Length: 153
Image (cartoon, helix red, strand yellow):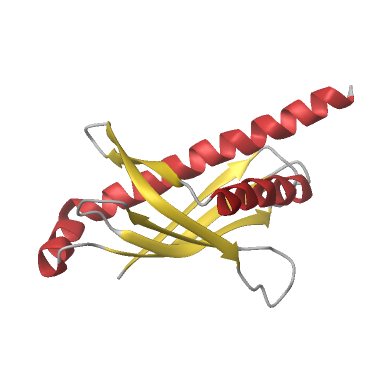
């Protein structure tokens, strides 16, 4: 297992970001459909669309403050890693911002060969992919927040 941690700062207050993330996650959980995850190859800038089966569920937070969501994805086909982790909105120091965080473990495929590939390049692909995943999700949350704020005016 390899560790993964990425975060993205959002221009969206913590409480609104939590609500918007919950709606996104519940929609994904309810659909049961496959999702397309963009794998990003660093240095080259290449992107590969890969279908993954995503499952989500509420995780337990003993502090009952943040609401981390369990997140699991596995490839529909091909030698790609599986991932188990959490997706969380955290409060930032400023009321107007929050932090979107992804952390967990992924299992490179193909045993020792996959572990060697992960050491050379796979880890960077995993981190770039997580960064891209958070970028897209964060943009969606921020645009929903801006639209709701504009509608109030």
